[in-house]
Length: 422
Image 1 (cartoon, rainbow, N blue to C red):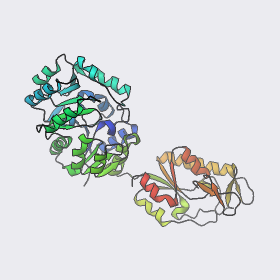
Image 2: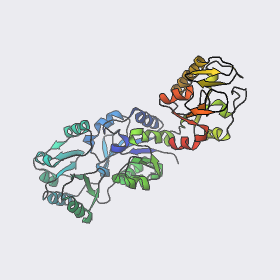
Image 3: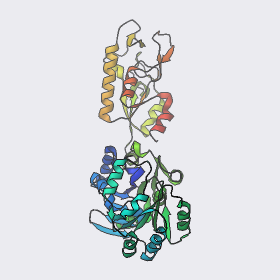
Image 4: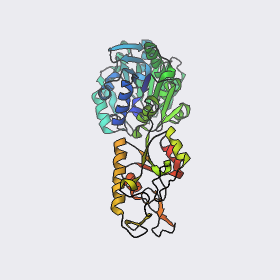
């Protein structure tokens, strides 16, 4: 079934580890998906006021699910399409209880986050970038009497930050026993309290009803316990590699980490139908470009066309060498033929042309002929023309690896498939 909606959490998922930026590759992948007709939703524990910098980076986004699913907002039409706030009597009970502790908490109301200035002394944070914290503080709204504010306004969520508070156990047990509320801890040192039954999956369901689609057509990404509902409900639920163990265990799919463009990689493959591009030594594909005029046809390599867009390359012929040709090996820092000709310039030229093709095609991987003076990786012939091997790389393989392209030999197909998430 085709994907009609992509919903992604922010921190630890869509955003880079700085908690502020969306990588260029992720922006590009989501934009292409949107141009294909797929709707884009941000699904976050944050409020609206805390994510406009993200929306600026994704101006084509269609929806925002905020406060852990307590509300869903249509960005294009500037309207609230779903809301499940805390009843005021429950909010009053929550804040009255928290006022009995020296604890920092915030109230989420009307898409904004409110706190009380004199409670900031109780706030501590663990392992968050200072730039993010500075930006976070700028977007907070302050009230001198937070408990009174919470009781007088409709609230979506209450956040408690405990960070080693000795009362942590007591606070958690209290909310575990309150059957009216639901709480998660997506970040160490954080308890997020919403109405029982509220989660991102229900908000996504409301959007699905608007679009006339089902959850089976949803692609969702998350990393923490507040994402678990939508990951299990979505037809394409992806837990991030850097996410909580429970998400990785329960989700149908696993995406690479947020530091490795995990969302983009999955969107490219599953939503856009793009195959990763792979440079392959042409001789392995059956092309008669080997030094003796033959080939090294490998059926397992040829079968990779099912998973990759294959780009054949032959660095030696790219460098102007004929077919057939006298065999060559690396001797010291030079490449010489068996009859003594120095062919270093031709091998370097072929390597540069192969790198140019890799960059033009945006190929991230290469599968090259093992032991070759141009394509060998890890082990190459030792220059004696006796079949003996030494540690080292061929000229082309070495250049590609230095430029960030992952190189594999034909005996490493399983490693290639694993690295490419196939």
